[in-house]
Amino acid sequence: MESLPRDPDTSLLDFTQAEDKDKCILSSDSFYSSSSPHEQKTLPIDDRSPLRGPQGRFDPYDSSEEYVGVVTLPNQVRQKAVKKGFVFNLMVVGESGLGKSTLVNSLFLTNLYTDRCMPDVSEKIARTVSITKSTVDIVEEGVNLRLTVIDTPGFGDAINNNDSWRAAVHYVDQQMEKYRRDEIGLNRKNIRDNRVHCCLYFISPHGHGLRPIDVNFMKALDQRVNIVPVLAKADSLTPKETRNMKAKILTEIDQYKIKIFQVPDCDHNNDPFRQQDLERSIPIAVIGSNTVVERDGRRVRARAYPWGIVEVENPSHSDFVHLRNMLIRTNMQDLKHTTHHVLYENYRINCLCKNPCLENV
Ligand code: GDP
Image (cartoon, rainbow, N blue to C red; front, side, top):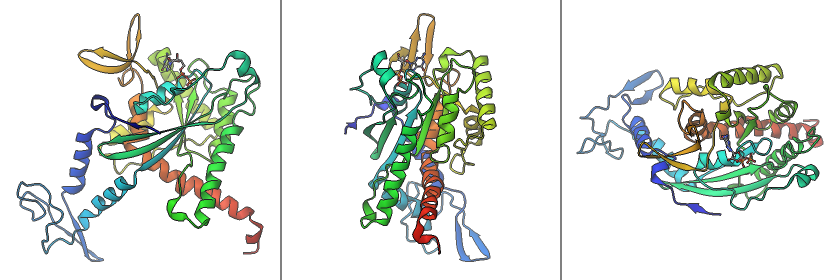
């Protein structure tokens, strides 16, 4: 387990953004006090408000009679959550060579695959799909995220890939079952959440839409895990090819009734257009790189070719930023929420229904 020092140039959490968000919670224009169920009293918080300190900054602990202090609740939740730390379990699936490891490193600005060894072709033929886990602690401005990346080496490598999805299904179910047992066990307070919160499914840019292995995998897992389809190595497609490929993939997802993660209507994202951008970009066309190059005085992650540079974070080159925003900055809690309240609930209900003791209840 390593704890990574963050590069301030490439820090994932934009602190100004975080501060803005605080301001937005704390200096909201109106404050509702529910003194009567039928009456909502709106108290403006302007610069002369008693909730503002001497420097005009918001002071939630001011003991003014007009304010109960409900406004501090988000802060209390935040403090508790930060103290506890965050956990996120991400599964990456796709045939080898599609850029999964490179993308994970680019997303989390880390090097998760230091001891990776590549099998040769004879090993690949004999190999079955296995599951590997790498965990890293990412600390930013005192906020700790324990990230576990679950990889499926061997997926799609065999000559017959009909059963490639089985190992992933088994792993996902195993983690759900472990959580369920922990929940009904004695030590509920210290349950470790190893359930898979999101599965990035990598689709090859070289085909004509989905292949049978893609359909089989997504159909087998779509009731068990939040699937986010990504179009790998988008730099190998022209913008028109990318558009066509995305349209084809979406049509096929629809045709095979595959359930992919739906970005919920956002209440925490102040800019609805960003949300629409994200929705429009699915399947998310991504580019990954482990190389940082100098560009116009800036250090950027990019792929350098003899004819030019492809920047990972440049929105006109790929949707990488949408993916990172969704996974980390805007929808990580939604992914975890859906995992717990929808997917895990379904799993739990299925288990209860199978339990013979409950047959007569
Ligand atoms: P994995 O086996 O799916 O984990 O794939 P890797 O991340 O190991 O990448 C396999 C090869 O593809 C490496 O040579 C990478 O440098 C290259 N690669 C990774 N991401 C991209 C990308 O977005 N575009 C292109 N053109 N190549 C990539």
